[in-house]
Length: 424
Image (cartoon, rainbow, N blue to C red):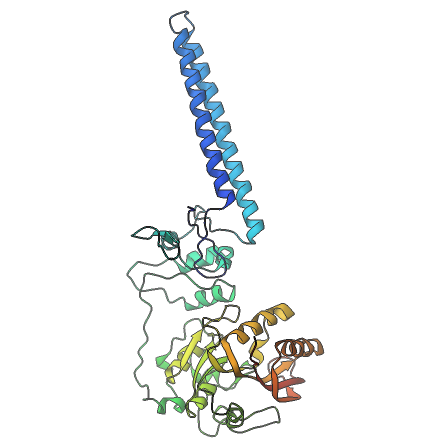
């Protein structure tokens, strides 16, 4: 039977039986204990024999004790050196480090959270697990100071108003974050409209947490180019740009929702919007009896709160995190230039696209909406990926659009509706 050890890795609780390295450490420690006892036995036995024979007993006794102490110190140094070598080998093999909770400035709450918890009834007969370990992203170890700041609070008190610290950790790959034992700050939610009227009603400033943001009101956000998909996206006034999205086309690359739904032959019921701005795609889909989850972060604006205030479902998650959904669950996935991840590396886009493919059901639709191909290489990378997946091209339009957030110049954009094939 092996023991269970915590590995801070892919952001999930993982359980692993005792490794060869840990077994070697146990054997080494047993050997050291036996060796130390033998030295002690020899020293004190020798001292006892000579005690009645000469007047130098104290000198011999002290010499033997000194010898034992030197040997014990040497053994302890060897154990420490061996543990460091094993830790370095583990780091090289796994590609990441464990949390060193002995370091200074580690918050007590973080130490408590990362403790292992033995199962009350011992080993589980179905899984073989003997203890539960917490779920924490491996990149948290690289940001331990910031994580300790996040985990510094009064237990059962009010949490610090530090959502921006949490988001910094998420954007640095520290995801999922550890749980906390404090009460989050509450903001009065008076003045909300009943659903579905809430979908397109303007909202007041006082119902949102503006702490950590440059703007403190929606008036300040007007005219701001927060992203390629969010220019005045908080302005829900009838006749505005946001109100017309997905129902009125401005260019050949702007597909209409009704046209895309028709391609699904009535089989579109649930969807996932990646980087969905203020949630208008989900709002338009609700009008057509389609439930959509909107993935977003609060970058420069309270996106998550705004989407929830409209009566929609926000998912607070970075695109570097594996989607928390089972395989083959969505009928439709909508994505735009938010797919531009991985620092421009093709591998980053590949990992994301494979995860999108995982949660999209066979026969489901992937809607690429005005994806900016800032270079021919990026366009070719995306095209090759789609061909590898074997998606059927139901709509495919390449055009130009001014990149109002980036270069300010016309850039090549791709809009497409793709159908996932049935694979054996």
